[in-house]
Length: 292
Image 1: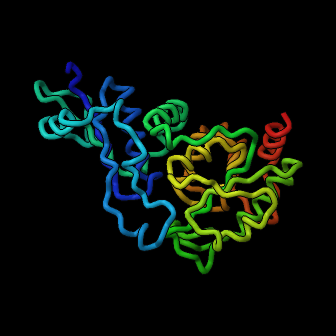
Image 2 (image 1 turned 120 degrees about the vertical axis):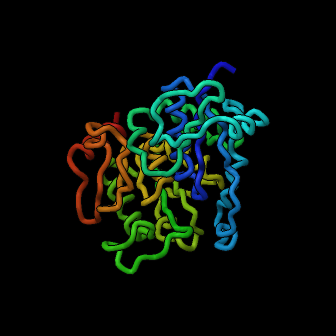
Image 3 (image 1 turned 180 degrees about the vertical axis):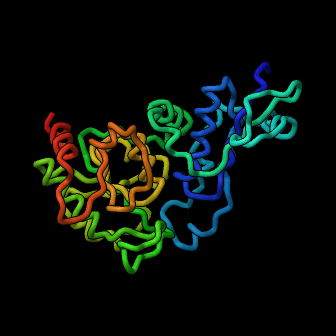
């Protein structure tokens, strides 16, 4: 093997949205630096999802192939013999002989992906096993992601910590506002780790159905097909919106981060609270998308 520069994403024990961040950073760096990725390790021991009886047990190792990455015995050999360097400390040089493996960890560099969503979506789709790819949407829909799971209920949503639930009534109001702006009742597909009893106010709305898929990657890719996304404060919502690059509604003050280039973001993203109208550029763009 002539290549002596390798990238290796160190995946934390977290939800899939967070784990995908070091993978994506490593993927893009390998493309830009003529390097090859060493297959990440998706298997993590998780007890919480079983204790909380979550729909998604987070067994992510079942979802992906490693065909396009270095795996098997060669993976073990490179991890054992190459020089290791954290990405933040890497100066671009390669020592003779052993080669170097640049390590990617953490989940605070989402803005570095901006503008490269097509590359990342293609790579993510390619490494996902065919049985976990979603069916192609046959009509425009509103994708609503409600994060519950291990997020606690906040007593005061306006001063709530980041990892807390948004009020279900906010999602309901956002659906009404999108439908009112669009001029007709777009179907809603609901993506959530909660159970039906927790989601009754949304499920009682007309033309609302739950995603039938139980795997996180399937739901992220399905959410990315939405014409409009109503997101929660989570990296799952960020990934759906980032891959879609479409109209996205966030709770006021709870937008998880920048996912679009500034000019596009001004038209396609908004923070919103009930009782308000969407910004003019967002409203007109949404109407044009649906009617055009």
